[in-house]
Image 1: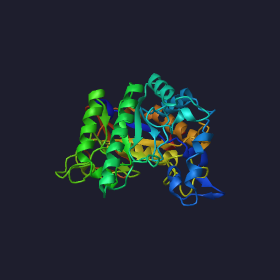
Image 2: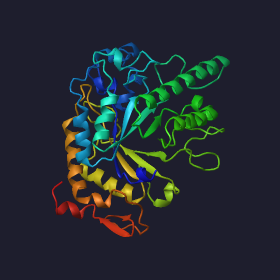
Image 3: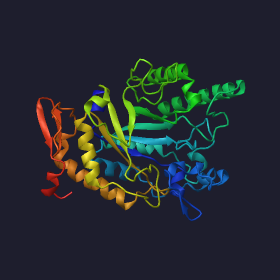
Image 4: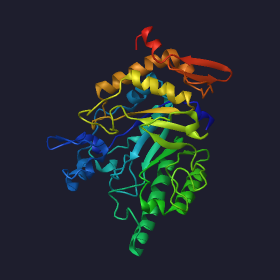
Amino acid sequence: MARWRAYGLGQFIHWGAYSILGGKYDGEYYKGAAEWIRVWNKVPNNVYDNLYRQFDPNQYKPEEWAAMAKQMGVKYLTFTTKHHDGFCLWPSKYSSYNISKTPYKKDVIRPLVDAYTKAGIDVYLYFSVMDWSHPDWRYDLKTKEDTLAFDRFKAFTKNQLTELLTLYPGTKGLWFDGTWDASWKKSGAFSDSLEQHLKTIRPGLIIGSRLRADEFGNRHNDANGVLMGDYEQGWERKIPKTYADVHGNDWDCVMTIPENGWGYQQKWLGHWKTSYELIEMLAQCVSLGGNLVVNFGPKGDGSFRPEEVAIANEIGNWMDINKEAIYNCEHAGWEKQDWGYYTKKEIVIKFIWSFLIFLYQEV
């Protein structure tokens, strides 16, 4: 966790079958997050569920992805191995809905882990517990049949996670999602045992607060207010207002560039954040003792949109000059001023002039 606290800046990548549609179907744009387009009643399930037959990312170049992230100043990556649709970007032996059944056929995770690790960037794997493709997934457990089905689903989940840690031993942690439904909240004992099992496989594995539930169905914090996990995952597209708001927990903020889009969207709807805004968010997060993780959504062919490439480059130019005020820094304990943020590195106070600095350098 000392290494985790020192990161400062991270990268999130959402990539999957949904990237093929890019938030658009039959001439209309989906106003929600692109990776949720399967739930849009205008996309027939059988259409979405066969998108994987088109998944052939001939522009996928993990070494170039890693180089872009390194220039940006990224210290850790979180990558979507499986989103809510259940499509696996690795050749899972527990599901036929996986990368080996696509025209691409090859595992995309192994070369990604290798490329980022070689670039000095730690890799964390995103895993959605919710799985729309699995016949035993349940939103709630109302009957005996539901419970029996979900018991099978829990065994499936444990098998897939064990598989990921076995196939990709360089993984530093797991980032969970899709754990908010009643079925999982009623499975607190299992989620606790699952966390212990995963950490037995990989001592030192870092797991956030979205995996476990307690015996009362609480998530993130148990009934006593104690964080369940190694760090707080509740800061999604929002930043604490004050240091007191984090309650002494480790935390990071995962942030989209458009208003609410994680996977690739052909058209960014509404406001999309500039590098100036994201740099200020980075300074703010580190000044409050957390990390900022900026999300990118590659296209179905494996390439990034030009706007994302430009933003990564601009953040990297700023980081090249100001990285000492970001890496291995923490909350300084000084009163917030209107002109910028303070971070503390050992006994030296670093100043981040969030706006004035832009007058003296080219981003």
